[in-house]
Length: 98
Image 1 (tube, rainbow, N blue to C red):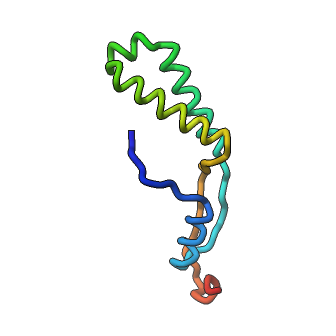
Image 2: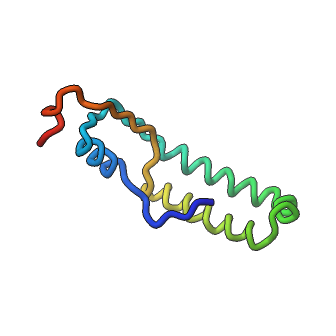
């Protein structure tokens, strides 16, 4: 699992892209998919708990279960954004200036 100090929002990436001379083409919001994915992983770990214990050990599995629970809760509360962000370099440098 990755360890992140912070997460960035769609607005962060939009602002960063604009600052670097990119324009937004399309943003596809897929946060529900992230939440479903982590919820399903947690369900599978719980359903096949003994097999996971044998393969990975109790400390690791319990740590993963706690982490997945937090990700699912955060997604359900809309604290997370997930999606596809498509930007392209502006051809006209003035088009991204404020």
